[in-house]
Length: 385
Image 1: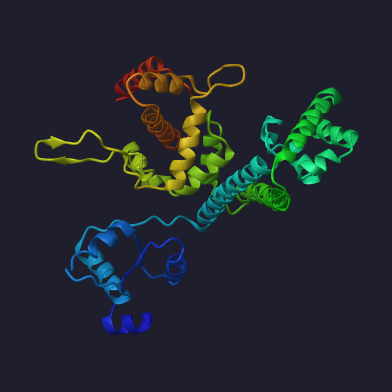
Image 2: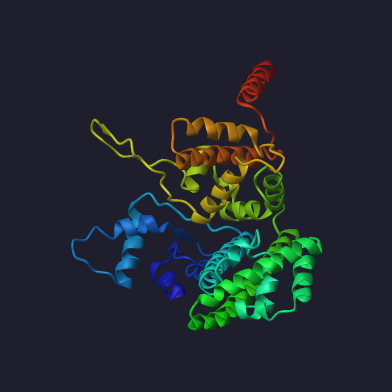
């Protein structure tokens, strides 16, 4: 079909496809491998052209016509397709968070069943999903199993997996036995929930193993010889920033793709959808504007967790990032906490942009130190000129 079109037009046409998740990628890479010009259009722009006609018609031919009209007559906004290695990294990172959401859902279901079958169990261990707690539930999935369990064996399981002494484990066993006796007042029909608990435990174990496998695969992908060296360096630079871990760094670089396409921090924040929306008409200026959320939602998600981590303190009470923590509390004096956190996300994006632009490790500076550093830098530029 493509060759016939070239013969009919007597020139090589330019191909435009709408970004549709993953479904446009096979065609796009086919065009690229055959030295054909192919571009991916932003679906928001394509959707806006479908309202030109008064009649409500939606079919493949109309969609193709809308894409062609947009490409020919309007300023086209392209979607960025990264290198195959970065695209594969992006898919693996997104799969990690998808499985992480499934794990959270599975844990919530387990909590619901335990609340009905074994009231009070969730308060026995500091982490109901820790190794000790899950091992106890796997071996004794109901109050009846706890009452008929060997105390020494149960104590040994808790003591070994929690790395606590036998006296501490014995107290936990006594608590479990007391709660199991109280649970006898629950209807007998709830005893079938022990089977559901087994299913949930198996699901949690499988998901945890899958997450661990994906994390190992991400490490292997980054260390492989065909992985772009610049992207590897970017990940290492972000991983060194306080509040940003390995998975966050990988996800950010995978979502960013080609950083050289971002010419300013403003464009960078817009890509993540942190830029404020604008509502203005005549003399009216809206003052209840929200962030646009037009960018990558996965990037925004990890940026949110990174901002939360940055304003926290360590167990010793030392701030993770003293500058961002002070900035957050200053904003909280006049803004709501979530608004202040979005401001931290915005500032954190500027930090990330500077680190990737300069390809230098991040340094925590107070606003005063940063201002003096900029003055020194500008004066050195003037002297050099």
